[in-house]
Length: 160
Image (cartoon, rainbow, N blue to C red; front, side, top):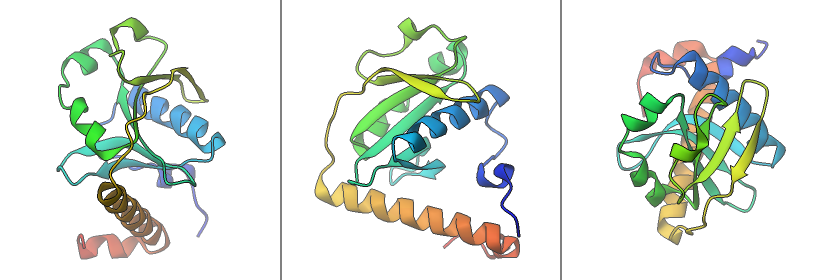
């Protein structure tokens, strides 16, 4: 079964076309920096992170995508993501003014082809137990998605 790029993007109908393009470009940037990424990953808090990125040294990034000024202003939950990562970034398009984004998070500007980091995120290292929990969540989510690509009927068996 050939892997088609659309099959590798988790869409649940909540993401705008702009958000999907920002995610694509951001994930390309992170991949070039040797991070593996998952989109829409469930966190222990019950929230879902737009992008979780895992480095070979186990550094964990969360990238919150904001597709517009209105999207940013309507969301007050992003500070909660800091408890689940070593660095927190926002990713925006060129249409969103960077000056409205919080200074205490990193900033990425992206389109459907690539991205660049405008501001590095401050480091706040995770506790060992939290890192272990995030690594297990990441591995579990990635394995389930890979299984779903190889055996789409398995998706109907429900969550584990």
